[in-house]
Image (cartoon, rainbow, N blue to C red; front, side, top):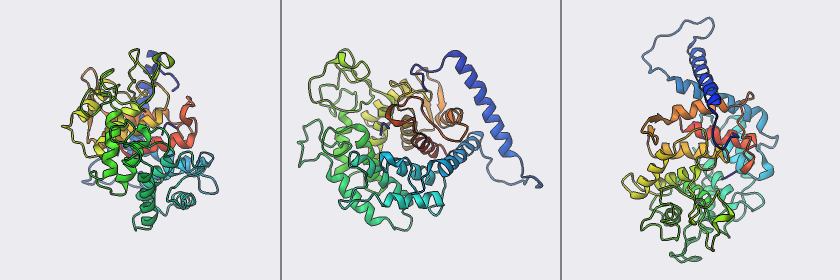
Length: 393
């Protein structure tokens, strides 16, 4: 969900400072972690040495989890529950994906808290405004913790709920631009973020890529791609044609002058980072291969706009959601490196770990000075950061 501060990126002086800090942080982490415990001799083993990137990742993950445990969680087991169960689900998932067991007190209490949001209709949500989003992230969380099948029934009914509010043949003709999509609460306009969350949730409960709900969603996602092809029959397909993705498909006449952030002068929809990675990840989860023209175009856009310092096209807005989608998509694509627009190859995991190490607060949390989409909330930003780091192992 769309839930730093310099949209144009850091200044040369800031880059120099950050580079120095990056080298210092990485070197210190490597030195500290490689020392034997006090009073013990260093052991010689045949084990593969841990890379400096992994050492640094473990260090910042430990600090982030410590923050969530000590500062983020309420007595009721929730995180930022004033906005519903979504942040709680993300926080617990981030802990599980970074090695915390389900009987860890923070995890166990969070799962119990999340169960209290299960509704008679099968959804897992708070006040109902974000039914799909909250149910989907809760599904991913319960699926991650479902080692003994204890959440089978909750997940079965939640799957029925989210597929039930998707725009399908019963509500939209396949020719309709909104067909296959889903929005925050079901009714109303669908968007790429919520549809991507639904695909991820369905795959988390082992739904095959060929499932009708996922294939319907793929139709909508393909229409959210700036690609002049047979897969996008909307009026926007050829106006930008850069292979990137946009958030929603307007169905009414638009005036480009109303938002330079969203629209190009010719009435096209601007691509931006978090949607680009959401689109790629969703297409892979829906079964597309690297040979598909949609995947090729998405990868090309990513190469043309590679960055760990900003959310391309949005600057600092939604930066931590961007980090999460960035890591999830590149991991799903099986990419170890990404070439940028100049042809330079990047170890994206090392880049992201170093960037998040720099951005981590003294208390172990992360937060965004740009308050858009609630990322000034430490629990949300920290959960997104840890989710991203879980893909960097």
